[in-house]
Length: 189
Image 1 (cartoon, one colour):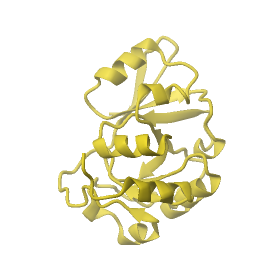
Image 2 (cartoon, helix red, strand yellow; image 1 turned 45 degrees about the vertical axis):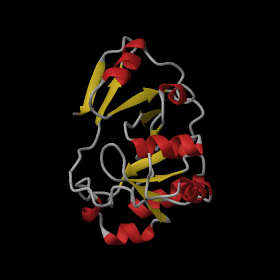
Image 3 (tube, rainbow, N blue to C red; image 1 turned 90 degrees about the horizontal axis):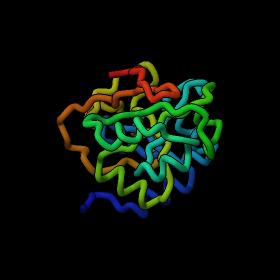
């Protein structure tokens, strides 16, 4: 697929501790390298988010997901394959995850976006993207680029051009956690 952005340019920004503003399969997000404490601090500062609150990871596949969690319950893996809405799952006791993206939690929220741009970017950088909604903490995010606060846009190191003209308002993902039997508890529907 052809995008209006050069993935090498975005990759360079991410590898240099930059924060990007980009479209996802849900709403526009702020993203950075989850393995750089400086990048994550910068993301928290731009968003004006309390560092005790966690961020999420976006991965490109179940295979990549398995690099960051100890075990996927078979029911959850099946759900990830067949769920028709964007779905963020909270996984207990992740591995290979820096504490600075977990806030005060011992779990991590991870989503496999069903979006060609996100998939291509994550594949290109060959690692997850740390992500949060593109709004200042406490403000609404309507899901389209035109509604993002210009002051927030100005603080980002790279603003993705792809889908800036979209007018369809998307919703945030469904968020769920699960118990040891794979039973889901929906936190946001």
